[in-house]
Length: 273
Image (cartoon, rainbow, N blue to C red; front, side, top):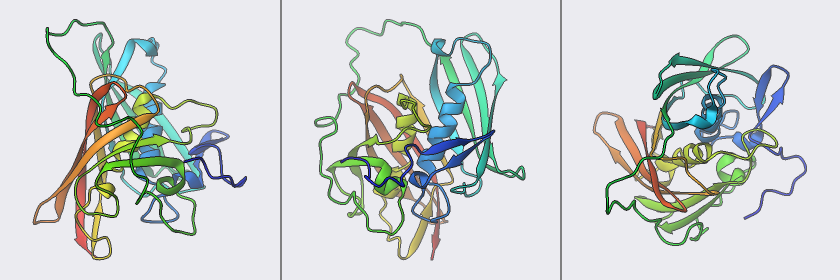
């Protein structure tokens, strides 16, 4: 699958506009045509945490966990102001906070990221991480295309390949996903950015609820990484679970071309339409 050929399509999920960033139409989500999908917003927050200027060598750290909270809809085409700060310094473990606000100061998304000092560690004899499932990046494209009048993240900015299940079928899925565009122009997405962008699909692709009858929206996303993911493709084995009082969660085991690299969980708000 190649990026859309239309010259009107931006070359990234966000663009720089003076002191602000602006979400392009490639960041559009499925619930509201005027608002972003959670994947691009999460990837932007990861980028902010990775690039924080705290006086240390960024290469010395690895992102071990990030929790994103989508507090309000993040608008398409409006100025977004981003900021990140070192909340808790440390020699081996540190904590970063990041936020996205509108021009009037309203916060629309925030994140807290846990960094761990990167150092070579000899693991126990015989320990072997889980291998990738199937062939990396290979699977069915059926059910990964969607009709619609608007360019959107899930339709135009990613390539999804299903090895088990489908977006058109309820229940757990195994899939490979790759970003077709960078978060900002001219930048190669990092493994963590690719991982969170893929992980945010877990709720939608593994749902067992009919979207015509039920809302099942994830107001957050937590991703834990054992190491920086490598390669363009991120694999996810995702499933959703529901409670009787309007809450639930979607979870996924995350993979790259080397094998298991992480885990994601999303809280779910469930309601009758």
